[in-house]
Image (cartoon, rainbow, N blue to C red):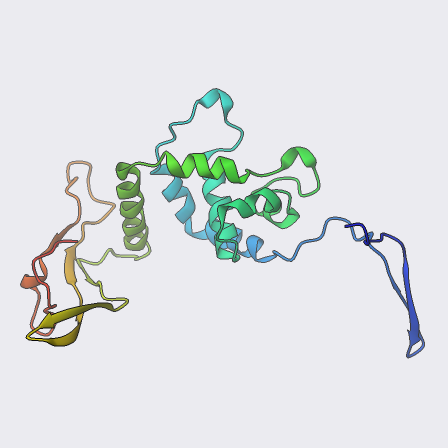
Length: 218
C-alpha cells in the first residue's frame, strides 16, 4: 500500500514505560492450532490411513508434495478455519503450518503446496477414491476400540431433510430419516477372513428405529 510505513512508531510514555512499535517482527503466525492438530494426527494415524486409500494418478517425476503431505496441509488448514483451497497460496508460507508438516519454518525452499496443486488433486479423485476414503473412516473408527464392536447402529438423520408434500391442497412438512445396522468384523481377523463389514436394510431394525423411508441401504 502506498501509505504503509516500516518506520518506528513512537507513542506517549505510559505508566513509566516507553512505548514503541516497529514492523520487524519477522515471520509471524496466529495458526498455532496446526501444531496441535499435528500432534493429534500422529497419535491417531487417521490422515495417514486416509492418504493411503487415495490413488495418486500424478506423474511421479513432477511431484514435490506427497499425497500424505497434501492431505495433512488441506485438513489442517480447513480445521483452522481456512476452508477455501485458494488460501493455500498464502498459508503455504506460514511458519506454523510448515512446522506442522515437518518443514523448516523460515526456509523459502520449504514452502507448502499452492491452491492449484490442491485443485488438480481434488479434481482427479474418482468414485473409487471416495469409497476407499469412506471405508478408511469406518476402519479408523473400529480400530479405536480395544475390542471391535460386533454391531454399529448408524442413525443417518443428523440433520433434517424437509420435504414439502402437497396432497389434497394441504402442505405438510415431512422429515425423512434412515437408520441402518452394520455388522463389523475385526480388523485383526485372520487373512482368510476377508469379509467386509455389511449393513442391513432399515426395515430389519428393532421396533422404535423404523424410519419413514425404509427401502434404502447405506
